[in-house]
Length: 205
Ligand code: HPA
Ligand code: MG
Image 1 (cartoon, protein in one colour):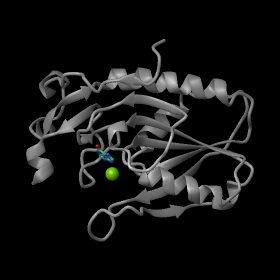
Image 2: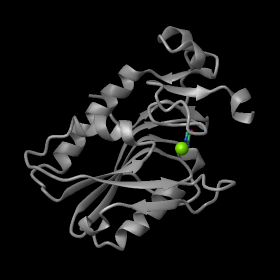
Image 3: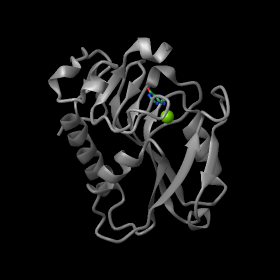
Image 4: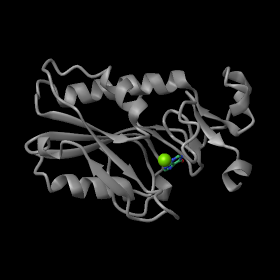
């Protein structure tokens, strides 16, 4: 097994035509940074690390940060086996609400009364500036969990503005704007199966 996180900050992009990507998406991509097979292997490895860490713990409580982490959450938990049953939660958070991006994300909990005493694992697609996860961590703390940790598939470390640490990280990524595997640009492209870099022409547009 490779050591996680996998550092892809200096990796060359591959051209999008090698991956059977829909024609409409190919022209919107600068290139592919991480093909889906490599994402899948990494998710499996994160799943086995989490299984080892929380083994036999029925208070394990993974929380999916909607919407971006849906795909990662489902794929990750398919790879988690604790030997005991456990429950799951979701939270919706967005930094893009009614106008320009703000530092304070909106947060909507569902069944927050279930958090007390749990060993919460926040499951996030990408850790970037850190505002979303710092806010979520502080808000969840108010519900008295036993512990809170973070797993993020992608970590854009160079962009960090507030201190947040993830216990489990898949890939360290460069400062680009990514789409795919749940990541969106203006709510689109989440269904792209690879991690791609958006064409800057579109990003600016
Ligand atoms: N792409 C999409 N959503 C994001 C990103 C990104 O690179 N960083 C933080 N949210
Ligand atoms: Mg988003």
